[in-house]
Length: 119
Image (cartoon, rainbow, N blue to C red; front, side):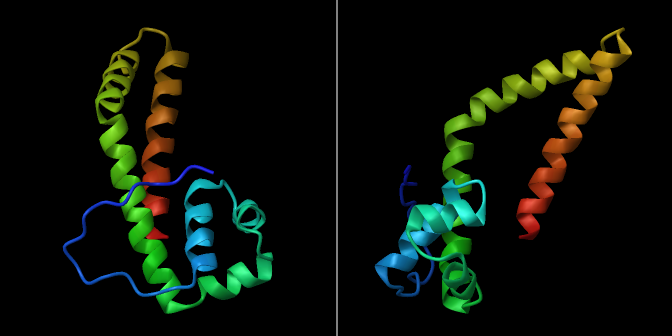
């Protein structure tokens, strides 16, 4: 399993959680589904859902998720600029299929970002 490096925080310390819950949080961050995260963390799905209802668990998850996103942005920022530059060129293509595909990629990206932000 991949772990996300800690980022310096200038806020109050994270609430204390058992090690199993911290592992589950890391699994939630890197696994594509909650069921996969439960399997990877070696806890039942019911247990993971119960933990996810806890305000302390949610607070730690929210902050670790934000740290993970910041890490990804820092690691991929330069590449992302190039990707969007390439998409901007495709938006001007004479082929409507190419333009439509670029539109779809951009809309999907924005939808995904908004959906994750609301979670």
